[in-house]
Length: 584
Image 1: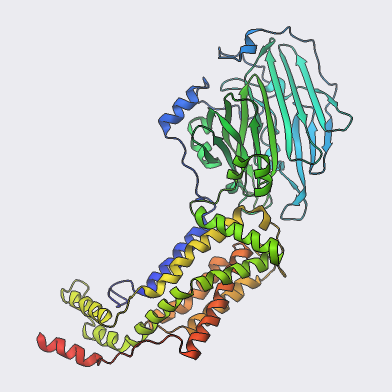
Image 2: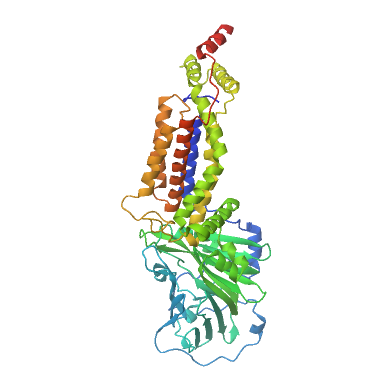
């Protein structure tokens, strides 16, 4: 290893590179969150082939004026082989809104198409402090409303989706039935809500000339909290395949780039639907038969910046008569496990789940047992992590002190080869002398980077937990309103404290290099960190600030007590170099 700044990366540059890579992780992690691998193309084609579909452009845009097209021959349900007698006309005289109110929901239906216009979670708020609306208002302007009907490729469902359904509502207001019959089409939809549950029973039936018609039910144009920055990027369709016991995720970009602009999958699924970072709407099919999900992408205006972005959409069902239980609610671990343990897979901890999940469990345990505030819980857990890493920090400090003591000898070697071209063969001699010096005094040139490198996985794990744990969404701490988002202040305090503490800790730490240029780079690191952390979640900045403050306390103790001693360098740098010259 060559300490010359013009030749090779030294320890400080490696550290700078590590922070740069961390910056890249933060800036692109929303788009590169670990996803379970999709089946290979051959497997996908085989899977789609089971549905009898062809991959063509789906019926993405409403076209109420177009007449329904004749259906190509398709495999039907057994019940479809026995046509029912076509019903007479059943339709409402005008469009109406129907509201269902439970302890957890406020859902507004329209009888036009028997679709949902609003689905509000009462116990949660968006980033603007309003009741959380899961249906995208911007999406409703571009695509069909949730629970519209989708047929297979090349078949238009406008007659059903624009029809005015007659509705009946139970005395308790929790069950809705929608009926429609007109011409060759008839349809029935039923929604059975529960007073204090996030589960809803859903049934749908569509017939053409009395014959059951395979169909799916939409939720597209976006899902979840549309008021947060990066809302579209956090959306994805999900399905848990019972055959391989694996969760599959698909974002809007992947669906958009697929042939035909969507992907179709059919199989034995425990659940299938759509989700964002903290909420999900998934269908759990009744029975053991195959279930189908289509993953779609729609360009919808963002509520935060007014630009069009690809938003995830889905359609589920696939049979002439669909029956499933619908979960629409928070991705709360205890809640999901209570419904079905497999639903816990909706909380995706990424490839570092072996760190992120225990970290989440530890945060919950400490918060529930003692702290009762997630901000202080993050502080306590961070202190524990730093003290567990203390032996490595002591090793790192010894290495840095040795490096600092070797600086005169290093400078003498550098001066000896100063001005030589990188291509000069004698440069290899310079590196050999440096390595010999390190070996003689037992110095590991990258030893000071080890604690930082070990902290990176914890850093990413904290970022993941803050991105997926509903418990930390909206969690308060002192002046911070939501630990999962940046501070709502004109000047964010935590990033400023982080920069100041980072600078102070570097001033207290023994310099591992005498090169003024490299030292200036190190002093720029706090500013770089401040820029990198200014727009991330407050909980993540709180973790780093706490790490800095613990590091300052530990460094002060080492500096003032002599707790870390290193042997003195007794060799004269000049003498060592002169001996080398005489041999030449």
